[in-house]
Image (tube, rainbow over all chains, first blue to last red; front, side, top):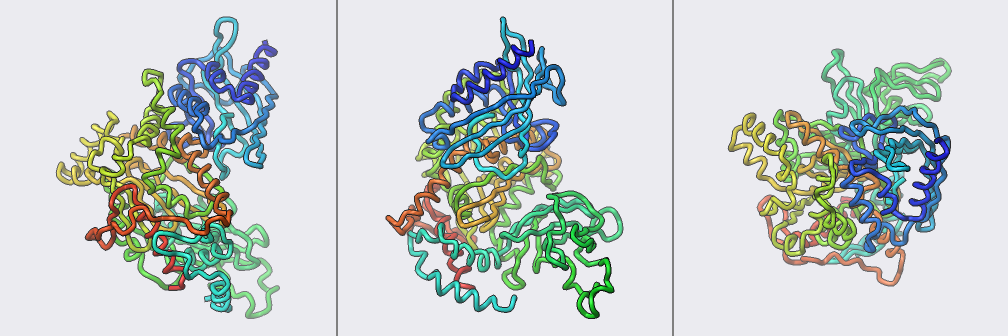
Length: 160
Length: 455
């Protein structure tokens, strides 16, 4: 099962690297949330700001914007390459709050992003709450803890 | 005054040709691109003006401290205890050891009973007084006198606050804070008066974003009523197409409403939004007649609870007066831009001529429903976070400005929208013909010229 889960995470990363944002969004449940905290060990996205905190509605708008031809922040688009590793099932420091899930996955990622003559590296831990869906999985929630979460950073347009 | 400063200033001024850079309705591109101009700004503008430091709630208890910058200079905002645990005096100290010049306080914020330098252990009280030096006897008589304030963490020359907003000046002389703020004290009042308990507090962490571009660009942009339709087109269209029946826990409601609002037609900015500018470069956008559009908070169900609380605490008449003020962004030149509708304040910090850091703070209104603070957080995420679907298009625009202004194809940058059509507003300032005017930019450059001329 671990191999299947890993394959799922690799597939998610590949969709993002290929900028197939609508297909990426389709991996999430209808009540999903997506969270990139701004503080290490941030407790929740309601009493503290975040780099990203999207409920499903905001996720859909974010993705639609990414696919909009008028998006200046992706003209030209970023080019990315992600590596997912250290996948561990069933344990995490984090929970999904009200979003109950069947499987909890913690993993590590690194993402290189190239745009406007600059290449930058992001890295950190990610936690997925997955639900079993037919023969596969859907993401009930995803939390991304960047190593540099509270750094002063230029704009981030491509999700992690 | 540092010895030699006068000579260096005049050398810089002669070499840079500041005169003539600002003309009616246009400014020379060098003000955005020339590192020499930037250095003079650090001395003559940031070195003279009142600069925002923080809010008193960031240092509520004795020993609380917060590190920030005034211009490029690292400082510590600290509450110096006077013996009992509560109360104490606000101090703003240069974050620099009196010995060899190391930064004494290395963390961004916290609480301390004293400050100790990592290098040789020189120790300071929280008001900057030097209280202990190892191997004192090693310094010949007269070279290190622990009682001499010159060896302490130096205090920034002037510190003053208005209703809890703390400002400091690197210059010993100049107008008082009250004179500097002038009519803009009413924008701070607009924010603080909205708290049922009469107090606000910084809360919810700091949203940071940096951009490649000059520090003046963000001030020019936040009170620019024309840019949203073009810059934010992708998020406007994305938000408009969003199905409202999709699940939301509130984050989507606030964010999407704001994105849609950026798509208000030009007639709205022309006829319903005003722009006002004041001495020292300040300005604000607002006073729209149809407050259902921009004052989105009113559409929020919890707002009704809030109105009832305000009426109970302040009386119906006063509550209506307070809530009737409809201002959007207020710029206090050259360091902050803030707005009361969602309790946001941005601190703009220049790093280099083509690099700027911005810190976004949120406020909680004491006594208001907690849902309003939750809305404040969600609003900050959509407008101030580095991954904001709205802000990222502004940041891209600033970078393109930086890039385009490197071209020598045209030395002049226009700022003539609404030129000559301003009227006196009765509070010492000017009212622009409409919310599409560039009055605020011209006003900032008027102030800029005055500072840069050295007086």
